[in-house]
Image (cartoon, rainbow, N blue to C red; front, side, top):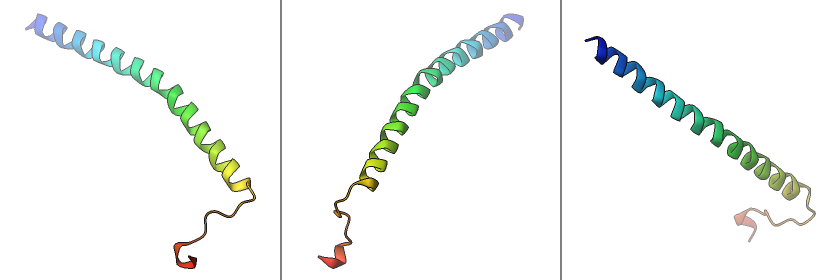
Length: 58
């Protein structure tokens, strides 16, 4: 029974280590992606052309 508990604790520890590494790696990809989308929308909002007309005006 003792070894089953130790094995369960070790498996949970390994799983948390893997999930933590994935979250740490994917966090910066998410930050860079959010900045890219934000800059795109900022440039699109500040551009002078009016391409976003409603469909009903066509």
